[in-house]
Length: 590
Image (cartoon, rainbow, N blue to C red; front, side):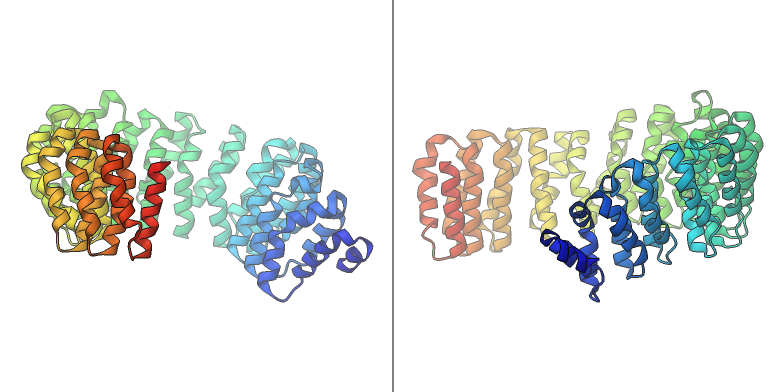
């Protein structure tokens, strides 16, 4: 093929080279050629792509996985290159072969491309070309082709005739009862998606019995995927059918011997709650949720604890408070003191959200003691999650009730040995500033904010400078001049040059929010004095800071004060200082 290309038409010579590369021994060359397939197809034209390139690709699908993966991805976007939807079926042979290979990622990509190609088939073409492909894959000798088939039913089912639909349902049922667990797993994974496109009478007659069988499978990896499909199946049924067909299975799965299955039920619980409706949620799901919250496995308890707020919020308003106070709250009280820190952390991330749901009185009486317990927890993530969600409580009871416990928790987190914990508490400071009020903040927390500026981790120092900017935006320039700027100015005389650089970074952000007067009168003189610093890194940061500050300064000081300093830095012996000084001069002039 390559030789005839180059001989008949000189302009096709590069195509011949690319096609030769597809046969090259070097994997990287083959991979590069596959990635340029669309270029080859464009140059060959529609007819030659269909008659030569696609058959060539189909015949040569025995390669490294990364090459096959690239090919599977490319073919999904080939519709226009073979002449549009009318000829989409031309792409099926190579994709069918790719959908049966051993490597999972290649099969998955081939299935994704087949699903995309199916959209361009007419109903007639689906029955003529696509459905036979699905049937061949579903009846394949190797489990690989049968697992791929599971993902193709839902894309062709809605647009084919009734007899073909019946065949597809039969094939899907067979896959759900396949001898190989991997195939049953793939079928269980796609069951919810397929059920959405099947007519409701066939969901009840064909798919529900299969769903029940999968939920009782001897492999827990199959049962947990059946648990995942619960919500999708339940959403299609009436409450009566749900009670009869789905709820017994949900009860069985929630008490399954395998913790992985129970974990999946807990993880999908809110979706299931929304699917079954408020009546069944009240009569059945509340008890199941209660059991999951006191499960013997920590992973299950953590998954359920993370759903507490959403589950309670979706309860029927008439019975919401009663269910929370009698069924959920007793379990929450136990979880607050759970032995596993992941359970406590998951609960701490959502427990504050219960305050608006249960109201002021219940929050003060029942939830507040739990918040205070968690603020003293030995695990920093638990304390951090409580502080992160203070806003919910502040709206209901105000923050003053928590202040005495809040402060020690904030100080401990601020001094935590893990820098990421310190970083997280810094990011919550502006929120705390708004809720605690200026007076309390000045008294207890301003000094803490300043101490972060000299932290040994750069990310903390950087976050601390941004934190100062947000605090000034909240409390105003006058507060900054009285409380923050004097302490920041002291850093310009620090012996450690990193602290002097942090001072300049602070000026960069403070000049934006302090206004022209304070920036010119208070901040500028110290920056200018640092131009004589003995460390080059500090001097070039002076140039960068002056460039940033210029737009916030009184224009009258630019010429007499700023320009001479930059001119001096522009003849500095250090090449970086000269570069940034010249950049600053050009920036200010521009």
